[in-house]
Length: 248
Length: 256
Image 1 (cartoon, each protein chain N blue to C red):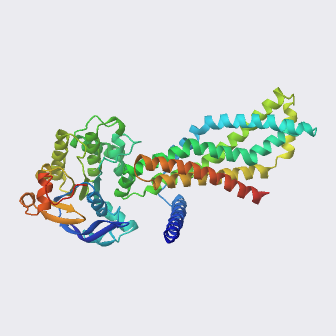
Image 2 (cartoon, each protein chain N blue to C red):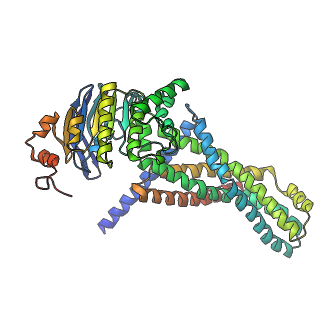
Image 3 (cartoon, each protein chain N blue to C red):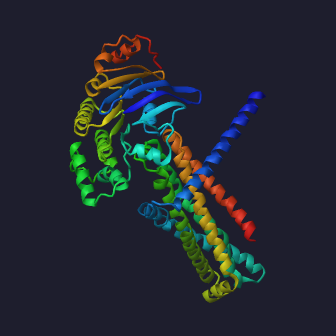
């Protein structure tokens, strides 16, 4: 279980997170929505200890990663897989080596077993036969799928998705969402998805929360969010230009 | 007036913070050089990057440095009737000063700038965060192998530069000035001591640390976007080059 308790984060004079609290149960797929520049990616980076909050706790299975360092933090991170915004694949490695990377570095598996697992993971994301391509030779959608395969290769308990469909066309976006749902069913991980894909994300997530001005202003099931009376949430999910959200 | 003092104070504090961070960065990297796990394959790849791929530029600059040095020094020596000293003069200049310094400057331009850009791009495209998210230390994967590779490659490249430079000088001495190769090299044996070679190699080794440290550091803490990487790359090359010359003066003043 992931429990976030009142985290605050500022960069200089700019407050990005202003007391966010939420709880994500094991096996749950939670989505965080909100406008661009609203602190969603900053929030995600807190969950894996890449950024540390100025205040508050981030409890992952009872361990506060806001205060964890060194090997303790590494032990917590070993439970995570992350799909970064643009994939964050290693440029110099092939698709195969990218997916194999965590296995080679974190396990002592025999090379045949590594190969079997990597090919299996690439099959899961529909990229069989693309093993020897390098990231520069594949499309944006393929990069996200390779990133998903890399994130899942160690079968982590928690998978974080940082805007996994940003910049992709609707069909590819939909295929990525299907993949997330499919792999979630297969592996049963706890997931956090940062997204502003409305309304598609309502079909993917078990819970949806909205970040606005550094606060989690609403958190509930997709139905609850759809029916929310909060004017900020209503404006955001309808995409209306009229409402309390300031256009920057 | 008050705002100027405040801005100045803020700038000084920010520079001091940067300086402290860069030394902590180097200290962390040096500590990891001696603690497992070691990334030999990455280090070998970077050795090729610093070493093999710099060979052509080292050959060219070494040869022309030796040739131009021979050309210039000959006319000075002729005024004193000391043409026979051309070999030692060229060799000592190259081994003690020009070899280590010019090799380091050339490798900074060729490999250092590329290294900063590569690490900087890895930073802004979240590849470094990806390593962290896998519970892997980016310093161990990206920085330590480069520092080790540079420490090995710089003295080797300098040795090659020295050799090519001295031979380049001998070609000019024999072809243009009619000085026999035997004279050129025999005088060199009398005047160039092992200590001179050792000093040159010490310099090269320390330049390897400086260039890899500065270039990795600038890439690791690059700013946002293409502009951030561009600024980091420029700053890395300028700072490395200046530090090479300053450190060369410092070592030169000690060893004299």
